[in-house]
Length: 80
Image 1 (cartoon, helix red, strand yellow):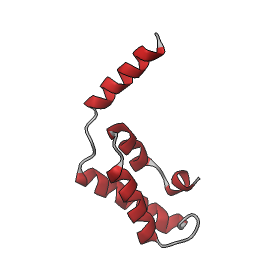
Image 2: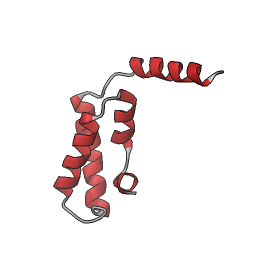
Image 3: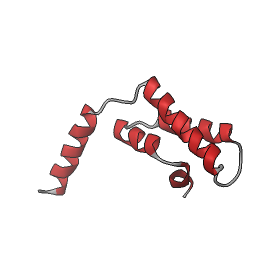
Image 4: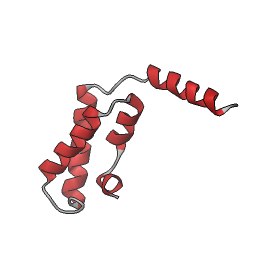
């Protein structure tokens, strides 16, 4: 399969993937916050500021598939 065909197929699949709902983002934020409280904030700072930065990144990303990847990241992944 040519690379152009692969890219086109990925774009079509991405179009079918809906953005996360507010409830899904809230649930992911709760998980992210719990991990921060358990393991600490990488690089220092407060849990609230780390969750706010994470939430902003998830909500503002333009691609639904990328939004889901960001939402599934752990603090250690994000700060690596």
